[in-house]
Image 1 (cartoon, rainbow, N blue to C red):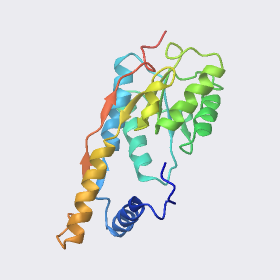
Image 2 (image 1 turned 120 degrees about the vertical axis):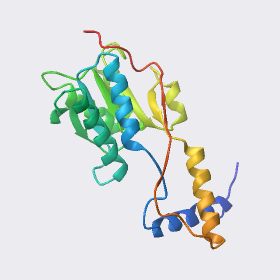
Image 3 (image 1 turned 30 degrees about the horizontal axis):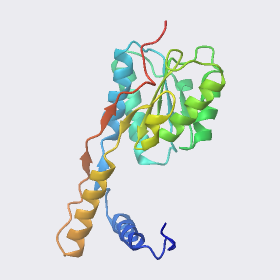
Image 4 (image 1 turned 90 degrees about the vertical axis):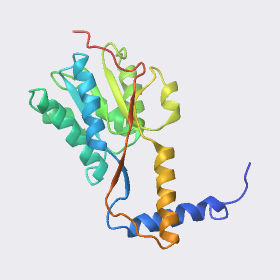
Amino acid sequence: MDNRTKYEHPDFFLFLNLYFFFRDCETRAINIDNLTYSFNAINYLQKLGHKYIACITGPETILSCQYRLQGYTQAIQRAGNKVQQEYIINSDFSYQGGAESIKKLFALTKPPSAIFCHNDIMAIGAIWQAKRMGLTLPRDLSIIGFGNLNFAQYCEPALTRIEQPRFEIGRQAMLLLLAKIEGHGIDKNAKLLDCHLIIRDSVCPPKN
């Protein structure tokens, strides 16, 4: 067990340098294609037969959440359906936020058959609350998350999610930092990395 404080740990200064480096960049140099992969997640649910798909968003001020919501709305509209605002719940990336969002969605006259969550933590909170309300997942409700929590595969049911390439994000960030230290020019254009839709047990075709 490492008894050093976080300020004594050598990795702390690495992360501190990365923080100030990206804070000073004019644009986000490393990112993922939040819009496209959110669109793909909704499209996957639609191909399974889901028509009533809700979205539990993260904070509205976060750019990645804006893109994920845009991907959701574009997929709904591309399928020829109208975006129903009552199916969009603004939340806060927390377990509690996911749980409270489920209560709101299932208080609607027509609850959704599937939910797209902007991160894995809210998705796990949503699963927990849905089971407390007596729902059988995924038969009564399909849920997709977004993120890279390893333990998401061990919840019940195992979470289907868009998986972010966290190792590659870190590797690319380090390469940019080293280039900055060595005095090389930095491309200010955002570099979008690929994600993967990991299919697990939390999604199935709607029962009706």
